[in-house]
Length: 85
Image (cartoon, rainbow, N blue to C red; front, side, top):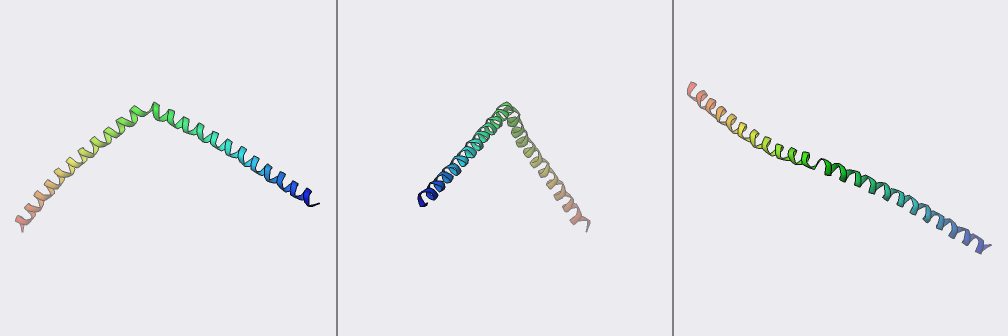
């Protein structure tokens, strides 16, 4: 009786390992397909991504210039306010 119980346990353990292996293989396959699709999307949009990054840098420098002008104008008005008093 002990040998049969042990054998059944070993078979069940083996089946569990087999099922886990199959599930892991399917998961890795799906992940590989997803990564391939993402790489294709990135490759096809690489030029657009680079343009967006370049434009963001230009926008940042333009905003910085505008803020500098606004600071100068507000400083000028602060000086006028001091003279007004």
